Each structure stands twice: as structure tokens, then as C-alpha cells.
Length: 268
Image (tube, rainbow, N blue to C red; front, side, top):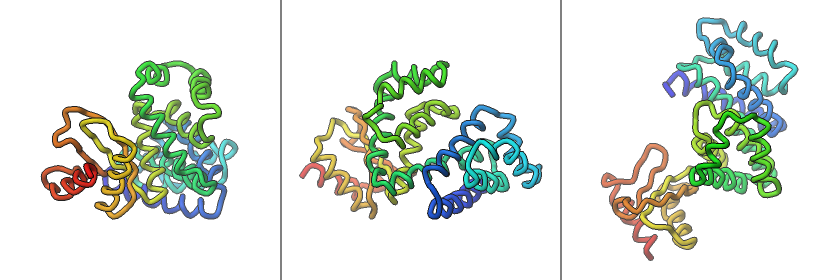
């Protein structure tokens, strides 16, 4: 995002977190994602709502006309704030509402003590989509929403938290131009951030044992000064045996000492 959109996103999230702290987080999240679902399918509408040449009042009135009976008051207020902001790209507005919605779902899961489990289930489903190409094709096909929901239910009914299924359905039905796995990885980042953690994308030359994974997580968390969730991928050709990326930072020769320390702890 460009600077104008980043500042607008920050304003939306600050308000979202304030609303979450005093309201029904799950209801807020569901309401916000319902608005995202409509905008994802209607390019004309999202362009109108992100149009900086139109007054905030006109765009807010359009929102109220369309959504006052289709979503919660809190979700509508948050969306009204969002359309009053400046966005560098039309999609940035929709992204901000999606991030707010997923953040609210994460907060609800956190309150019920299920955030860690939801995070793990979303991550594992994303990896399943990457490894099972037929599943990915089915989820990303032109099949109806009811068909895709039925497939998700067959796969996850009784095996995943309700919040997990909510997020997976959102990513599958309204991917906004992304592969399902990529959309879910973005959700994972939001879930991790709710726990004030970050996701470390780790590429290793060979599979890690559970003990090695725990050692690596501890070493990286100590190195970065905060807890990290590991997203481990195997690539036999990875140079040096391990490559780590956290956000925009890649562990390479510029941080060789840190990487060497992680490798020593992993081998011990």
C-alpha cells in the first residue's frame, strides 16, 4: 500500500479495535466480511465508495442505503469511517474492511481461548490447498457458492473451529483475485498479529522433526525479540540448509551471525 492507504488503514484498524473492545467481536467481524463479500463482487460499487472526488457524506449515504438492513450497526459505522478516508487504490478500501473483519474474528477467537487453534487450522488448510492441486482447483473453480461451502463442510465439519470455517469460506468465496492459499496466508498474518506475534517463513533443505521445529521457533523468537509462528517449507536446493524471512527481512549474508546462531541451535 502507498502511504495514503497505509494511514487510512491505520485509522480503520484503530477504530475497529476500539469497537471490538466494547462490542460483540464475532458479530462485528461477520458484519464487516458481509460487506466485503458484496464489494468483492461489484466493481462499480467499490469504485464509487473509494472515489476521492466524491464527498464522504455521499459515500456514507450510499453505504447506509445498501447495507443498513444487511449488516450490524457497528460494521456499518466502521465502513462509513473507511469510505471517508483517502485510498490510493480502490482495492485498498476493500482490503481495509477485510482486515478489520478478520481482526474482529481473531479477537472473538482470542476471547474464547481458541485463537491459537484457529490460527493453526487456517495455516494447515492453506498448506493443504498448496499440496492438493485438485482441491485447490475445485475451490478456485466457477462452481457455485453452495457447492464450495458443501465441499468445505465435508472437509472440516467437526474437525475445525467455527471461526476457522468462517475465514476459509470467506477466502474461498471472495478471494479478490488471490489464490486461496495466499488469501489464507494473509489471514494467518492477521491472526498472528492479534497475539502480537509474527509469521516467519522458513525454508529448509530437509524436513524438521518436532523437536527441531521447537528449537528453531525458540531460536528465531529469541533473535527477533518476540514470539514467531513458523511457516515451514521444504526445498532441497535451499542454500545453507535454512532460509528465513520475517516480513520484509530476509536472513541472508547481511545477517550471517544471526543465521549462524539459529543454525547452531537447530543442530544442537
